[in-house]
Length: 435
Ligand SMILES: *[C@@H]1O[C@H](CO)[C@@H](O)[C@H](O)[C@H]1NC(C)=O
Ligand SMILES: *[C@@H]1O[C@H](CO)[C@@H](O)[C@H](O)[C@H]1NC(C)=O
Image 1 (cartoon, rainbow, N blue to C red):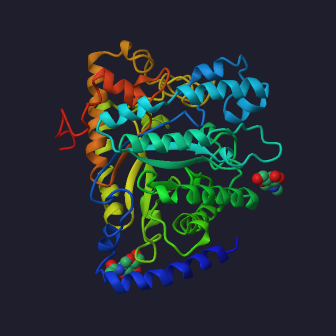
Image 2 (cartoon, rainbow, N blue to C red):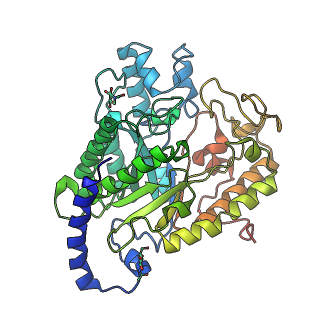
């Protein structure tokens, strides 16, 4: 693919950096990184946040009722939600969901829980529905409301592009479940995504004190090979230009650019977009311990150790590369939540997932917290604390997710109510859990 957009952006940056260097004359990359001023003191204050999953991008496991209510088992993602029922029915259900799943009261509760960030997933179809695409748009007013509500309650908001044309990972949470993603292999798809990022950057640049971060693409499928990684690498350069220089001007924005590691080890990105050439770039990494047979088979104490053992990698990259935020993680340590692996797909933990081997029964491990034993709630608290303590050794964390209809093990809101998440996120019961 052509690298001309990169060269254009790099020359604009070089001119501006030269001016900046003359003023600041910083002595090391770390100083330069810490020098960044945007809507939040990233690097000196920990990000503590929660995702607003399943609101502006549907996920079957977060709201099973929306999918079961269709009476059609072939409706497995937002694409088929629009495709396989009448448009008026789908629109009415979506509007009701958008109006009720998250309201300003949730922002108030999130702020009251001592958090400072929300990450809001949204799909490209809020801005651009192409010919033949069954997506229904209408999410943008809710994003705008969310920015207002975040402002009202002193929260920072991350605009997270969670679905790109063609799907960047084939996951249902990209909007379209596919056996192989097609975003990276189609230049029209990538161009459309860049256009969406430009629109987001342009609209929200002046509100950087609230919408302090744009995450230009969630979880591109780097595990699918070098084609994906080269497309993503170029896209990160384009996104830097699109976000840092909104409307193609030379006036730099103060919006942090949050990349995703594309499921590569953080070390893959060593030296990527370094200061002083690039300013205000951070890395998002997602840490889950339930999406393989070996992971679900770990004992509780091995899960805790695995969480604590993430510290070395996170701290290395955070201190020597880009500020590193764990933008998705959960105290849950099984894949038992209904539809977590897709609508109609079972769980590895209880052996109902194709090819898996049963570890144990899922009863009492997900669903309503009223079924959780006190020992299980203690484990969830230990899991939560081990991860928070570890992730705060880097630049912070954003739990997945605030609410889930029938998976209290994943819900921050349920954890607050059930006592396995503290009302104040610095109040640890197991401060030495990582030794
Ligand atoms: C800053 O980082 C770049 C790229 O990683 C490296 O080439 C350069 O030597 C570093 N500069 C300092 C002062 O550490
Ligand atoms: C590329 O994606 C666009 C939609 O963004 C689609 O219209 C077009 O048919 C795709 N091209 C190929 C070769 O698949």
